[in-house]
Structure formats: structure tokens, C-alpha cells
Image (cartoon, rainbow, N blue to C red):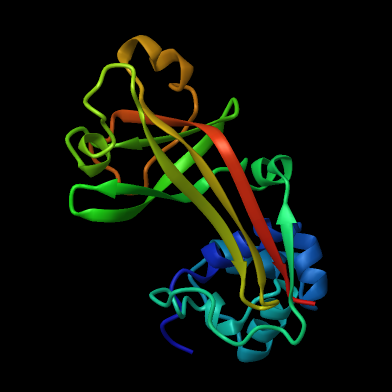
Length: 218
């Protein structure tokens, strides 16, 4: 098979996502832990049988392990026969988003309704992300009145395509531009934007309303 992409990186990502050790995955895939380590650390591709066993062990597909579908939005395929919807309480919502990652900021921008992805951290109960000074989330999230912040929405979700289930959390609160005097409150949050560049403006959201839902596929 060609066009594998970074197979080793995807193996590590899937294994860590499931909380499995290399030995546990190797046992499930009927291979030695040493060979799995080799695949994780070297640009090589195993035979088709080994790939299918690894995909089963990691609860994914060979297509995904080889980097397929990167430009495809998640959520393809029909729902399970009898899906159920669970309403999540605020405590469970905060637990789900506490690891940080990618969230979406929704606000009324200068060109209309706007939704933008950001890397975020949940830091001492407050959502923190970084953006560029003068960018849309700098200018459009300022009210122009001292001490008055604009209320926005912040959404995080997780989709398990294999099991046709997932969850989403919606947080609403005021977007506060962190000043230099307040920088100590967020400087150790550890949030790093994937987009890179000069993104030194910190914005924090103190949750005011929190809601979430989970879809169970079976």
C-alpha cells in the first residue's frame, strides 16, 4: 500500500486515545510489542494482515490509519438503529472539555454570524484561548465600552464514527480580553495555537450557561 502518511504517529495517537499500552495493543493485534514499537518509530508499512489487526485493536479502520479522509468532515454514515439522546449536566460538560483541545467560538462579527476554531485550555474553570491582535476575534469581540464584555458561544464536540455516537458541549459567557495587569491569571494555562504566528492576545470566557448532549449509538 502506498500513501500511508505518518503511520507511526497515527498508531501512537490511536493507542493513547484509548489509554492502551504498547503491550496491550500488540497482544490484541497478535504481534510482538517490539514490532509495534518499530512501526511507531520508523517510516515503514506492515503487510495488509497486520494493518487490519492493528486497526481492529485500535478500534479504527485501515483507511484512517493510513491517513485517509483527512479533508472529509466527520459524521458520515447512517445513525445506529436505536440511538438515544442524553442531556448532560454542567459538571459532566466541564469534565468532558477539561482536557482542552479544539473548540469553536461563535459570535456576531462585522460580516455577520461567525464561527472560528481555536485551541483552548480549561484553566481554573475558565476557558482560555489566544488570538492575534487586530484580528476578527480582537476587534469584533470588543464592545467599545470599558468594563463591558460581549457574550459569545463556545462549542466543543467529539464524534465516534465507528460507533455512531458522540457528545457536544455548549458554553456561553462573556469574552474578556486579558490585560497586561491580568496576565498572571492565564499565562500558565499552556494554550498553544496550532496556527502559529503572533497570537499574543489572550481571551478568557467565564462560563455563565453550560449545556451538553450525548448520543448513544447502542
